[in-house]
Length: 389
Ligand SMILES: NC(=O)c1ccc[n+]([C@@H]2O[C@H](COP(=O)([O-])OP(=O)(O)OC[C@H]3O[C@@H](n4cnc5c(N)ncnc54)[C@H](O)[C@@H]3O)[C@@H](O)[C@H]2O)c1
Ligand SMILES: [Zn+2]
Ligand SMILES: [Zn+2]
Image (cartoon, rainbow, N blue to C red; front, side, top):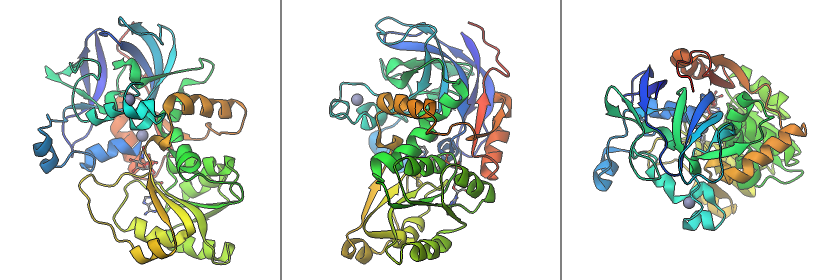
């Protein structure tokens, strides 16, 4: 099979849209015709090199090269073929990607925390989680499917463990966003920060992830939600999604939250800027109330080991800092839960997509993300579809 895909041949380069060749699905695998793929900031970390294993790690673990890489991890599509030993999907099913596979067998999956599935250790290793062999090639080279998904393409072969079946009545362009941006932001507030009714919440960075932390906090019953972002468009959108206050910077938010809470500060602060610079956690810690929680959702450069943080304040005010991946939620539970909240009118999905692009315009989509023009940009894969199934 042949299709078009957007490939990153190395960090520091543009996405290259070109023909890719694919194999038929092996045991436990499924062919998906992708319909929509969101432009999440995580792919941008691949371009800048922030999310590429550092040289010492590559050497220590003897990792194979991560490039060339087929991007795209936030996506929706329709199953068009299934290999042997696929038990939960059939052609015609609507699916979204699960950027962390859930094997159902490992210690973490067996403990009910599939977002920590051991298969995620293979994120930067080419090959399927089923049998370690590769299904996608371009210019004769094997392609790594980012996050075991690789949805910047017309078609893809994925392990069943990387897909979540959804209700076919949900518009596929909205469903795509739920697979990463909505699940990650909402879960950062609800599952990890554990926002409770009446609390004050601050979300730093309200792009595709943070705006969903805002609406997670609203749905969890926060009394006040302060959205912090230097871009006016994002602050305005945050007000539509449940923010009660906005600030251009953490410094401005400190004044607002201090006045609003008579110095108590916010029980929950969630960090979702595009890049987690070393200065941000330390700047945000004073926003956190005594015994409050700082959640780190944004991705820092993989090789960054230092952070400027007042440890006295952390200890003596009994504060906590928590990481969060995939909204600390299990995709097969979270995605249906979020889609139910959408169907019952509580979760807003319309309005998250600012612009849609053809695959050929993917670099424009990322340029618009960098320029702060989009809450979320989405690729409509039907626009320049060359494959037929
Ligand atoms: N933990 C996870 O599982 C997970 C999953 C997906 C994405 N992410 C990460 O979450 C982060 C956000 O992703 P996104 O897709 O929403 O990005 P985005 O580019 O859509 O939005 C980031 C927002 O942060 C704002 N911003 C930048 N610097 C800021 C600062 N100093 N203070 C306040 N706001 C600032 C930008 O204006 C923008 O609106 C990225 O680092 C991404 O890689 C993490
Ligand atoms: Zn993402
Ligand atoms: Zn597992």
